[in-house]
Length: 247
Image (tube, rainbow, N blue to C red; front, side, top):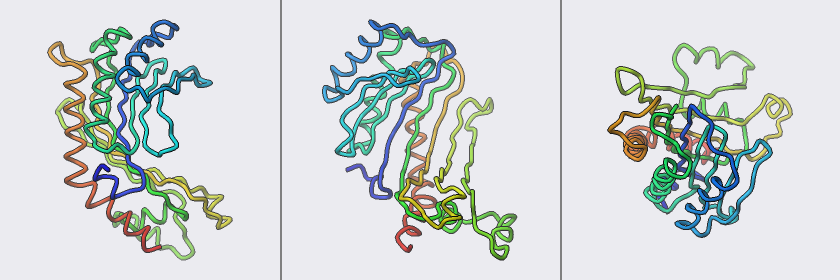
């Protein structure tokens, strides 16, 4: 199992390609695209259309480890949940981006944004917001507010976005998503929900004439790897895992 999985309950690697123009939605094109993906990954055999019109191809989810791919009106997506190796998921995304120009007429000029997301889910029954505040801490400006007599933390989802070039076209965002509501806090009834940590590396705008989608994918995935290894594991994932284990 991928080593990142040891720090959380579920780990996944997603790709999103947002386009300026709408993607093809006709039957022949959509089916031909997914057939090419299925040819490489034969176990992806569950095909359906969502109510909003998105087309989905995915593996069975009962093992907790599966691949999926979608075509939305203006977004092409791919993901793998709990991969044995990150490289397996990146190779799947590479396949999607290699097919897109030929199967779906997606040009690098048509790129609104391309992003790679490393996601980490923790299963926790309790106040997610309070847990995040305790595990990751608050800034000095907010600590005394949270310590006000009788106060309970209702919403705390820290996030930080950094730009890695002068034009701010390449950005990385670290965010935490909680799923505890005021109703849960008021009633004291906390369902077993997923607390999520997302590390996203994103390239904005059209790609250069000498850059391919795959080139950008490789760069973004390297950024995610580096940031997770140098910061996210030690300062975010491990503190959250320890806090949950102590509850």
